[in-house]
Length: 140
Image (cartoon, rainbow, N blue to C red):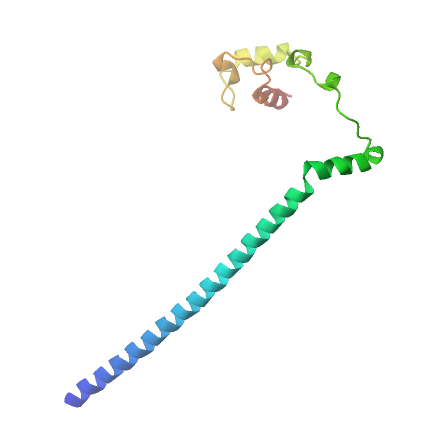
């Protein structure tokens, strides 16, 4: 009986030692993987900083001005004149299309599948809403 107990304890110790070794090995592998990933992250951060610096150099106003002057004939570039700037009042008004068949269809329907834009009292065609255009396309 004593030998069986000794044998069982010996097996338990061996299983525990093997299990401990496996856990240690996995922890070391994960640590190496973590170190590798941290090195890759650091390299990518350095690359991003380098690319940002390169972008800053490429888009510097002085450099862009030199390039614009050099290639102005090929690109057809011209300086902006004050007469090219428009005010809000100079912009054309929004088109206001009314379709009587759509208005009567909206008046007779109890609401569309899109939520019924007429139920809110706002005409989606006059206000430029897209739901009026969708309704018109569906009705055609």
